[in-house]
Image (cartoon, rainbow, N blue to C red; front, side, top):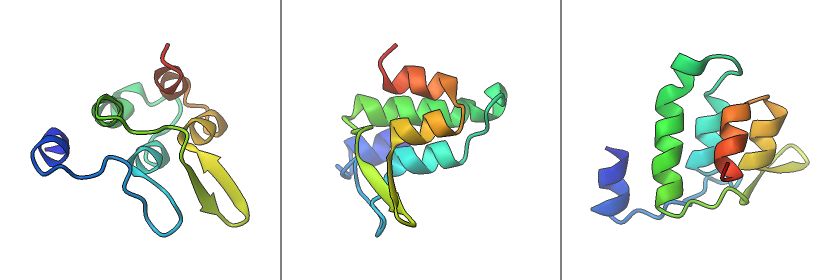
Length: 88
């Protein structure tokens, strides 16, 4: 479905909400450190987003703080996501 939305409907992969959060941020918010099986669908979605050019450096603002997807993944202890976003 995500592939269809990005490829066929040509949706901007870095579409943001009012706080600047992107689909990468939302994927990370729904993941839990140590939940490898539960995180699998989110990792697959993130791979698709990155394949279509998603920018992991875009920052969202929450309270008075801004975080990129990479910074958010690090703060949540999501080592697989950090490796993915850093291209490892």
